[in-house]
Amino acid sequence: MTDATLAAAPRTDFMRFVRSNIRDYALLLSLLAIMVFFQWQTNGTLFMPVNMTNIVLQNSYIVIMALGMLLVIVAGHIDLSVGSVSGFIGAVAAVLMVQLKLDVASSILICLVLGGIIGGAQGAFTAYFKVPAFIVTLAGMLIFKGLELTVLGGASVGPFPEVFQLLSKGFVPDIFGYPGFNVLGMAIGALTTALIIFFAIRERRDQQAHGLAEEPGSIFVIRNVLVAAAFLGFSFLMASYKGLPNVLIVMFALISLFMFVTTSTTIGRRIYAMGGNEKAAKLSGINTERLTFYAFLNMGVLAALAGLIFAARLNSATPKAGAGFELDVIAACFIGGAATTGGVGKVVGAVIGAFIMGVMNNGMSILGIGIDLQQVIKGSVLLLAVSLDTYYKNRAV
Image (cartoon, rainbow, N blue to C red):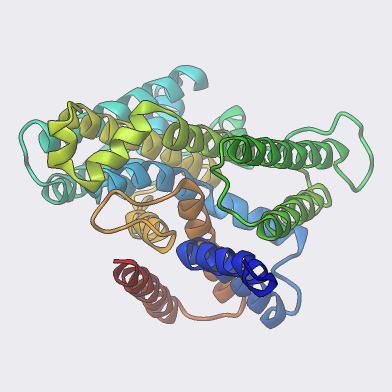
């Protein structure tokens, strides 16, 4: 080989990797561009610590439901009932805690179990009775919206006990007591950043040892520097206000769990295989009915958790709770790169998609853009994201 050929090889590998992963990088760059745009348009309001905290609190339940919806979509289905289910569970929680005076722990457990039963029932209709998920969950959306109104009697019920409110409104306490800055929150952020970088380096070394490392070293370094800067910057902003919200810890735990499930477990790989080609998966011995049932059961539990968090944030259960949540959740997954045909989608993509929607909602509200125009813009972004995803997928074929 000539020197020119040797020099061109790394460049070729670099461009090949970028082209094959363009969707992932374009998604992250889109989020950064949207944040910079609204930071400029709002004269610095977007990145204020109190506003960043609000963005986390306002989008926590969307992120949590997006994790469950991702598995449902990857499995080749859809769930239109998540908004109604979350609102119904919030109503049940209000009846248990406010009207029946049941303790918080028992009420939360009952609500999560009820959410699992609802999700499992819808999964059973889809998996075992072969009713299309679209129809099953459309019926569920109507049923549980009606039950929500029935349980509440058409009126708001509240307030909740203070302990329950901490689920959404509480913050991790600072044991150091430094005025104006939550040292513990910053320390947790720094430790999380260090662990992320450590595991990224260890994974890359394992890939190199087995000759599986495809990502060029330069991209690996740049990506992890940006990740570290983002986590540390976010932690600093949170620590400058009240610290890390309790719901953020719940979110991080669930994101870590679902990343592990989707990338490192048999059930995760089988869900992707089923979504890619259900007949082939069935012929290879995979119990596709059971996987579908599990995906919807999981969605029901997460919808229940989201309903509890939303109710705790409002400090009451309202007849309109959950309205339109399913649209934001589904949009987050598709904007995050999930394929409409199933088999494709990443947890990180769904989370980024949820925050793209959240930052847009927050930024447009600060700018005083009307809800009517907000819906037009969000719909256009969703259409553009799916169109680009389809375009790059067809090019790859």
